[in-house]
Amino acid sequence: MNTLRKITVLMLCTSLNAFALLDWETTEVSQKAELLAESVSATFHFKNTGDKAVTIQGIKTSCGCTTTALTKTTYAPGESGEIVVKLTIGTRQGLQNKTITVTSDDGAPETLLTMKTLIPQILEMKPAFVFWKKGEAPVGKKIELNAGVEALQIVKAQSDNANVTVQLDEVEPGKRYRLTVAPISTAESLKARITLVTDFPKEKPRTFYLFAHVK
Amino acid sequence: MLRVNPFKIGLLLVASVVLGLANGWLNPHRPAWSEEVLLEGEIRLTDVMSAASPVLWVDARSSKDYEAGKIPSAIPLNEDQWDELLPEFLSVWQPSMRVVVYCSSQKCRASHEVAQRLKSEMGLSEVYVLKGGWEAWLARNE
View 1 (cartoon, helix red, strand yellow):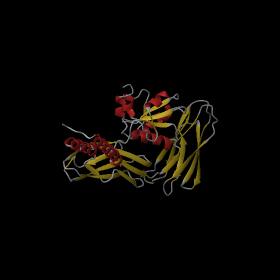
View 2 (tube, chains in turn red, brown):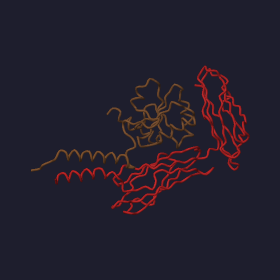
View 3 (tube, chains in turn purple, cyan):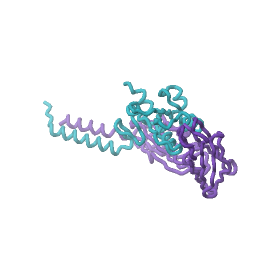
View 4 (cartoon, helix red, strand yellow):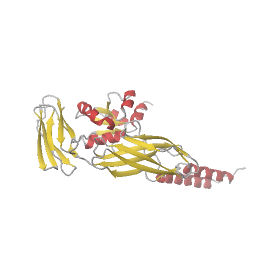
C-alpha cells in the first residue's frame, strides 16, 4: 500500500508541476491606436502566486518595432509586476499583431503575450502591387484607394517609369479614389514605383507608394 | 513481501491520463504546437522541398540573423525594414513562385506577420509560413 501511495503522489506531482507560479491578468490586449499617433503602449500585469521568488529571465519581441519595459526582474511570493510594451507605429497601418515571449524560472514553459493594435488606415490601397506577365495584354489595372480619415485629397499620382501610365479618378470626393495603372507594352520586363502625394495631415502630408511590374 | 493489486495500478494509470489530459486542456502554458498540427498558413519543410513549383524563400528575421546564416537564395523582408526591403522582394518575385516565409523557430511570429502583409497589402496568394522556421531548416538532415 505504501508503494501505491508513493506512485499516486508522484503522478499527481507530475501533473501539477506544469502550472506556473506567475499568474497573468491577461495574455492578450486588443486596442485601437489614435489617428496619427507615433506609438501605442499596452501593459501586461502579473502576480507571483507561488511560494518562492520568480525571476523573469528574458523578454523577446517578434518585431524590432516593439520595446518592453520591466521595472525589476525578481518578484517575491505575492508580489505583482507589469510589462509595458510599446509599439512604434511608423508607416504601419491596419491590424498589427505583435507577440512578446516571456521566459522565467517559475517552471512553466514560455509565456506568449499578444498585443493586437488596430492602426487607423489613412489610405487603404487595394492592392499596393499590380503586375502583368510578359506578353499579356497591357490592360489597365485598377487600384481602389479609400481614405480612412474625414477628408483626404490625393494631390498627385506619379509613376517613376514613363512606360507605366497612371490615371487617378475621384469616386467620392475626399473619400474614395480609383487609380488605373497600365504599362505601354508588356514585351519586356519593367517596374515602376507610383507615388501618391496627399494633403493629410496638413502639417506633414503623407506620401504613399504603389508598385507595378511586368514580369 | 510487496503485494501490488493490478486493478489499482490500472486505476492509477487511468487517473494519471485523465489528469494529464485535463492539464493539457486547462493549462494556459501548454505548448501551442506539435509536429502534426499545422497552424493557419503553415507548410512543412518536406512539402516545400517535394513541390514542383519554384520557391521564393523569405527571411523575416533581423538583418543580423540573416547575415549570420540563411536558407540559400533567401531574401530578407522583415517588418522593421519593410519599406526598404519590399522593392527588392517584388523585383525577385515571379508569378509562378510560391513564397515561403520563415523566422527563427516555431515560437516566433515574425514570419506570420510578414506573410499576412504580403497577402493583404500586396495581394499575393501563394504565401506560406515554414513550420518550425530556421530551426526546422537546420534540423532537416538530423
